[in-house]
Length: 587
Image 1: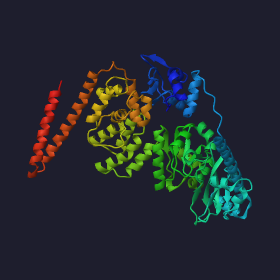
Image 2 (image 1 turned 180 degrees about the vertical axis):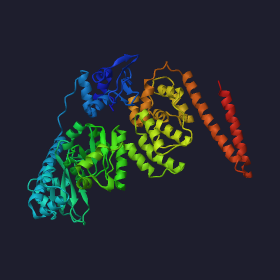
Image 3 (image 1 turned 120 degrees about the horizontal axis):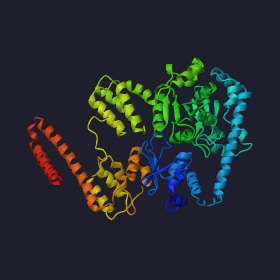
Image 4 (image 1 turned 90 degrees about the vertical axis):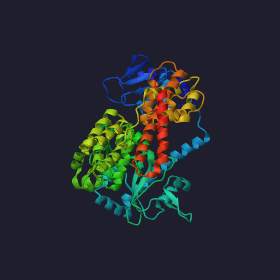
């Protein structure tokens, strides 16, 4: 977000969002706004709007929205500062000259350069150990058993870390300080203070960043006395959550195929790539992260997840699905038969069989429905549990029509014939809730609450008074706009907040609703209108309390206990009071 007084803030104030967006989208004047076909999803009827006064955009079809910087970031797949420079350039705003690096910054850059060179040297050392030492010969025998020949070893830069625990350190210390080798994560100290190699008696897999520079290593143990896999720790040049194994080689095949295959490990990646399917990547010893999804989304949004089909692999698949769906990815899931991982399947069944299954991999929700059916569908309780397993994934689908279609499909495949459950499922999907509830859902966002949101985002003489009234009686609780109003109620006094400044504090459904309301036009506000809106909310609250009191009366009367007389009398008095209040407030 652009901080007040910053260069980015000045650019935002001077920029014309219509002009910038117009370079990407053909816009047409439509009332006070400009409209066009959304660049973020396929459509034939324009639902994408740009508000020239509020300097925001919003698509009423897929729900995206934001300011001029957010638009450029999404279109150009760049970071915030690149977007600021792009907007400044498009609008003819002079960009200040970059300041000279400080001595500390120059030192850090020199350190990073040295670490990259050190990793290149270490990768060459490991490769020589595998190729030309007696220990390396045994390691090559293990790789041969896994189907990797000399061509594969050279192609993926595989190496071997000897068992001595000092060979790499001795080699590197001829050029680099012991401290730098430690910083690189290639050496560590034992409790006595002695420095030794981090990787010992392991097959080594070099891990490169997107540009192809080796920045870390993964090691597969030869022997049962060591942990199976050991990876480099994070360093100044390696942050695990931002690197995908093999992406440096896979990015162009991914772009060409407009699809990426996501597997769990190094051997799986190598096996799939050697089968002639080069658009394959793996996370490096971590669960899939948001940063990794953003990285791969620069090349494609079509992902085939092919993790191991065991329990741990299923859990990893579901975690990955959650992250991928939040970023609007088109996801399919390949669960290989026989409990096999990609490496084992390709070696036993062949590349052709793998490619055939890959091409027919089901959409993620079909995979999840299969998982949900394992919970049982024999009765209403089991079906409700299965639906609640599915709903956190369904709610992440940004398109309302697609959510509705999937709700119908879930109902069909789980054999949900009961009208109450079917209606609850459809309602949960429509409202993007993560849980199916069989009781009636809350009311939709009515005109009164939407108008109050507008008032709280506009400069007027009674904004503080309005905040106090809503907060004092908790009138926003239970509304569709509850989370939006909660953020607005906590906003700092003074100038009202902009939609783009509070949007990052909201989940996607609420962000979408916020921008829809921001685009709605209305007459000049007044306290009389505000009071009318507040009265609508007060009446709603009284009606809800009356319904709750009636349920308590029925439960109390039906208990058959004689000790409920006083409680029943209090409830009856409260019921009469609420009825009088509603009658006096009736128009």
